[in-house]
Image (tube, rainbow, N blue to C red; front, side, top):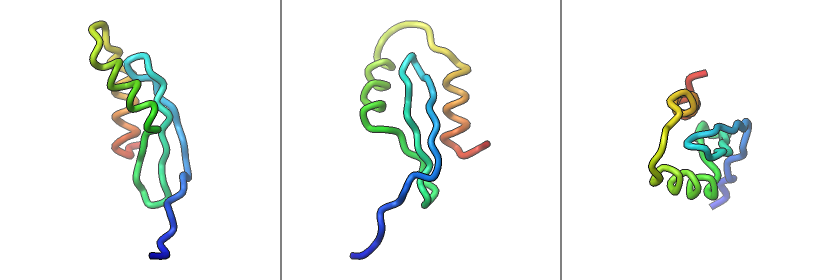
Length: 67
């Protein structure tokens, strides 16, 4: 099994539910979020309070690969 691991070719950060998500685009096209940030996001999502639609939309556009 000599397959190379994918490498990050681009990165961005987004604030969603008050949490900064460090996001990466890999050379194989996958888009990933730093694992620690996912944990923080899930915790923030479980809390009551106002949600910023603009932040969510900006992240959703990135996630879908629409530039």
